[in-house]
Image (cartoon, rainbow, N blue to C red):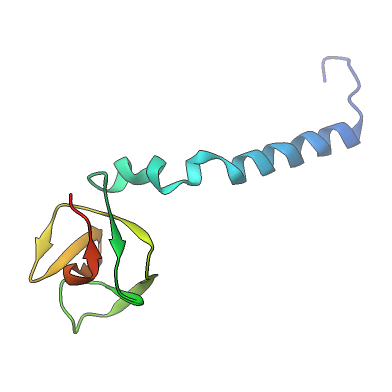
Length: 100
């Protein structure tokens, strides 16, 4: 490129370093993406395992789980004893500690 030869191992090494940096960067951190998806609130899971449901109902489909002690990003929306975590993601408020 531009008449300057660049050794192939240097290009491959540079690409590998860039991938490692991006993989470990703060962009994947929950705190960095929280403003995009929620209100910036975070609560801790107090149950051993918390089911994340597709709607605010104990009979709604389970769409995920969170482990006890995990911090989860939440919104301020609450309905029927459930706290909204994001679009189509709700968890029982009684198993989330902290305040928003």
